[in-house]
Amino acid sequence: MDLLYVEEHQACKNYVSDFHIGFNYKEIEKDSTLYIEDKYYNYLLFLIEGEIVVSYNELTNQTCSGGEMIFISQDTDFTGKAVTNAKYIILSFDNQFTLCDQMALESLSPYDKQEGSFNKLPIRGPMMEVLRSIHFYLIHKIRCKHLQEAKQKEVFLVLRAFYTKQELAEFLSPIINKNMDFKAFILKNYQNVKTVEELAKLCNSSVRSLTRKFRTYFSDSPYSWMLKQRSRHIRNRLADVNIPIGQIIKEFGFSSPAHFTSYCKKYYGMGPSRFRKEMKNNL
Image (cartoon, rainbow, N blue to C red; front, side):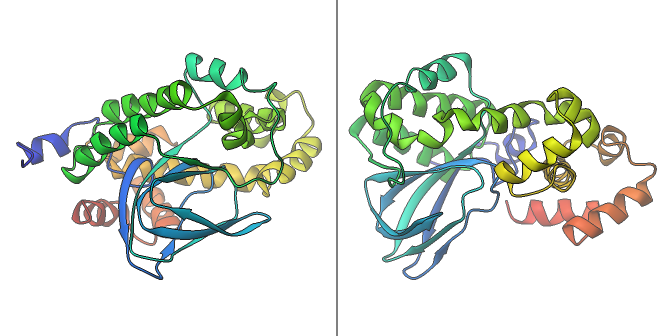
C-alpha cells in the first residue's frame, strides 16, 4: 500500500525531518559499521534480523542476535559491526520522560544491578508487534512527530508490562543510577540559560565546580558542550523546511542573515539554503 498525499504529509509542521532523532529503520550489509551519530541521546537498538558485535565503554565484542535489543546510554563510546546482513530499528531519546515513565523508572531503584553487565534483552512477542507497526510507518515515510511520541510511549509501556523489574533494572541501569541526576538536570534545564554563569547559578554552583563536574559527566567543558547543543538545535530547526530562515535567525539571536550564513558554513559546511536543499534531497 502506497502513502497518499506524500508532499502534503512531508510539508506538515509535525513531520520529523531530522533522521537522527526518534525511530529509524536501517538495513546494513555484512562487515558494515554501526554508527551512533549523537552521543547526547540514549538509544534502544532492536535487532530484527542478523547478528552484530558491539563494544562500548569497558565491554568489548558483545554479540547481539536477531530478536534481541540493546540499550546504549548517553556519552557511551560505542562501536558496532555487522557479522551478517542485518536489519534493525533504533530509537533515540533523551531523559525527559513523562511522569508515568519517570515514576516507573524510579520504582526500579531498589533492585540490584549487576555492574558492567551487557544491557541486552530478548524482543518478546508484544514488543515485536509494536516494532512491526513502527517498521510499517517508517518504510512508508510516515514520520509524524506525534505518532513517534506515541510509539515511544508504547515501547516503554511494553517494557513495563512484559519485562520483570529485575530485567529492566539491569537493562536501563545507566539512566536509573542516581549519579545520572546531574546529567538529567542539565539536559532538562540548559535551554533556559544563555551562559555558563547562568547555568552555574541554576545549579547553585560556582563556575569552577560546575566545570569540574561537567567534565566528569559529559567529558567536555560547559561552554563547549552548550555550543554543540546550540548547533544541534539550529540544525534541527533548519531541517524543518516549514520554519522560515528569518525566524531561526531571530530565535537564536543572530545579528544578520550574513552572520547566520557564516555560522552555518562554519558548523555545517554550507549555507542555510543549501543545507535545506541537501536535507530535502535525502528524504
